[in-house]
Image 1 (cartoon, rainbow, N blue to C red):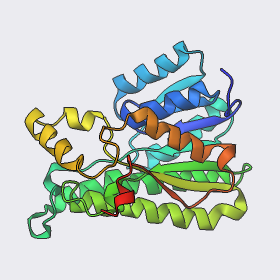
Image 2 (cartoon, one colour):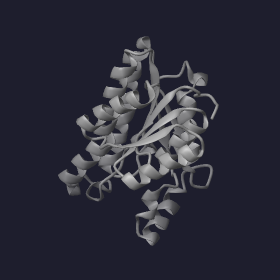
Image 3 (cartoon, one colour):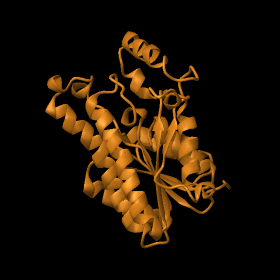
Image 4 (tube, rainbow, N blue to C red):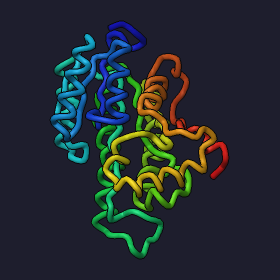
Length: 260
């Protein structure tokens, strides 16, 4: 498969479904060799097989992105399998049911710490080990996945999730400024209402109510497809964005344009 990333090696976390799976496939269609990572073995193996069926060089490795040992091993395995690491999409992130809503006094410490670990610790550990390799081997490009919840007040998203996603943005900017002179670009996207499995896990009536409430804000009144988020990730990692670093790209149907 030939394209913008011919001969490049990409690592994608949370690759078993949603934005991660769409990003892994998009990198593969553009010629990259892709390491897919997740804690969902069945889903991860399935996406890697799908990419191989498309003609790509792709593998799956189980790794918990909140475990430093796992992340370090994942980066090493990617380099050993494909001969390097040029591109990374750090997609892992989620909220805990006990950390939902806007009220501090009802928050569970367990939910707060779980959300911070999955959403912010995972990005820190991923960047730590990706960058450590890249600065010694000619640089690279990284795209993290934040959220509009990290940019705007959104009571549905929850305090912990919004705070963690805001932390992803700040970590992105720190990394971008620190490593620009060593050839590493770091950006992030901030997805709006995206059609992922998170809504499928909700009670249907609640999911519909939540989506209907949030649809008040975007200018484009439909849910965003994971492939549309992947398009933004690929552009930020591509040569066309060679002078773009430390930026947050909202892919949100115009939500942020309203200043909500």
